Length: 338
Image (cartoon, rainbow, N blue to C red):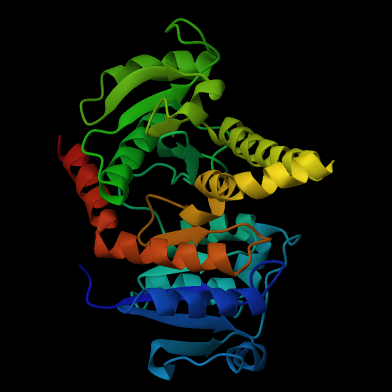
């Protein structure tokens, strides 16, 4: 376990920055004693938010960055021209080893570009996948890729499976995680060209516990611990997951408020409902790490408030404490030697 973990946090990233970002940092410090945070952003705005809280000043460093990358900016151009932006400064803190990880709710495009060209890939990794945990009936599963590589090749999907397995082993304590590939049916002969070509490669990969195809409807039931797909499919699954969850909650609320009897029923059922809804809250798992880079980079929703920011920071601490990146590096080091 690391003695002290230093997380670079993009204070200006996201719709609710810097207020909710700073609040999330304070909440994380309260929950994790061995944690230090480097808050990067426009200094006077960051300090104005920090003044609202009581905290140990030795555990928060404010680093001034004069620029902000906006959500709509072209990612490559933004990363190359805005060298003093909060996100780019955070990337360099990780690259230079001054921080162990990075958390941002800012531009996803700039995050992906910066991860590739500033922090860089682990040797042997073709394309780092974006890999969020999503809730299931019996816990959670890792979905990768959900946004980084829309046109992935079969060899890259195999790498996603290996990287995801290494991450889940340490993060979830599952010794032999089940790996499934997203498909339109359970039969091996089904699927598009990418799935059909990848399937036998996964079967022949000894480092993973490949269980075959997984249909989208089976993912919420916990059919696999690691779910592999290219980013177009993964992003559709993730956003459908989130949209259906929000719609169901809205419908339930309207139903419970529709009459006096239903309001009484809602009051009686509230403790059980609260527990169940918490189980399916994606915010409790933190953000989506870009796995396979030379440092941990975590992206949270642009609309994130303090809770997902806090959980993403705690997620980074777990990653550093468990030395997960070293496991991924060793995996590809061994592969390159064979």
